[in-house]
Image 1: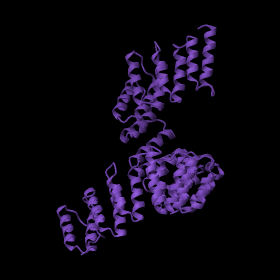
Image 2: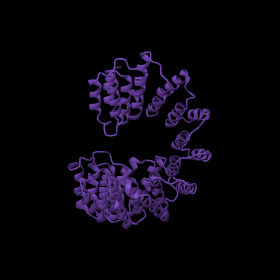
Image 3: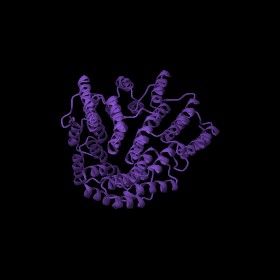
Image 4: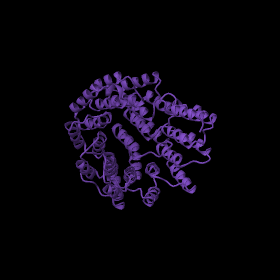
Length: 484
């Protein structure tokens, strides 16, 4: 290569790895072409790596297709790029293309290839790559072993993951984390906890993973105990830890612990700098009934996303402050924040608590007309609740029967509750019959129907309900009674 060519190559490498220039892919590509370096596998491999980190693999692939003699270095860069930004099958296609050209893989080929297989639902693809790894003698290479643990743990093949894990001469914290996540993902939290207790070295990721698994499996008290152990062992909670713990505190009613977390977040500026922490604090205070502090946190957040607004609006609905929630929704729109499906669940619940029937109907209709959001079952449920609370049971029934999707049991249950409150036994009977069609083996529905007939003094129909239960072999649950 001439001196001018080497200078051009250095200049291109500088552009590729410069913070302000690396995103200018088209201009850098133009430099390749201008200096006749578009067939340089070394430069192209750097270019592809940058494309992968920027999720621009479509562009990288177009450049790759123009390369006459791609070598192992370039193929590895392409496979790694697709393992980062997908689609995962492209990595496998490139591997097959490489082999068809007589290019033999090395150790650097397989770790990203396994990453792609971990993201693909078909485990057999990963097993095929594992067979190739064994054939090439790379099974003891540490990054490949970690890749195999990830592959099998992601696909709930924990016996295979155990075999690889047990064969590792050195198990770093990443491998331990993957095994723990794999056990917890399949619901074996106790085994994950046992493995966690055996670790000599832990990272904050390990702690967060274990606390999350405990919380998700309904073991909130154990999650809180583990958080205290984390603190006692000298670990500083990060933003992810706080986001995990605040809902736990809300469910347990551990208000003082939540307040301590808030104080800690303030001391680290996490409540101001990390939106997800601010959102979790708003949600925690709302669920703890302290809407005043929730609003203060919300107002002090320098940056808010739609989740922030949703948390505050839903929190006001949860605490029966519907009028404030509707007002906040209007303020949200003035700020130019586009509402989503969750926003409307919150604001319709606010209308229900405030008794704003007309405003609720307007907001429900605006979902499609103004925001191009198709109402779902939950939105119809909010409207049935709103209309039912206001005594508009016939309107609620009309809404249910006009739905574009099949109403679920929750909707008919909401209508039934409203009908019984307002004494519309005819519609209540209709709602219970729909519930029985949806849940034919739920004895509670038959008991409700029997009670409706008993309230109307129609003992003949009470007897028919009992007969129907016997015909369908439905047994009455303990604690439920049939009048008569």
